[in-house]
Image (tube, helix red, strand yellow):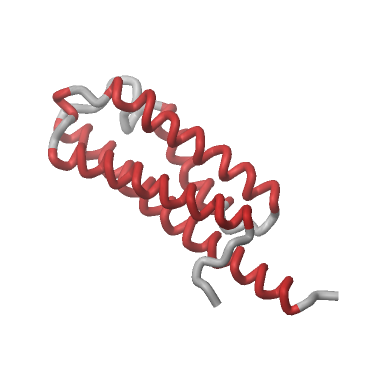
Length: 138
């Protein structure tokens, strides 16, 4: 039997998932846009271009994670949180090694900072979702 608490909890979780998904779509759309921009400007990282399989796989998994964010199951939530944690580690520890002076354009900095900010926000919401915390107090 479903209780009112279960229904409210499911609604909260669904709301978290929708917001996380939207943040991830925004992050990966911005990142893909920057990848195209870097190609057009001739400042792309040769290991991550619009033509490399790595970039295609990265964006396929990234946009796939936005779909996964909408799934209510705990395994999906834990998997998403692990993925977001790995992305943040890459963003903080690896990406700066590829972000040389040539890539440090205004749009490059904007994309970098906003992308990481969106990932941090999505990770925070994923943790709150896993904890079953409400987005807004009742």
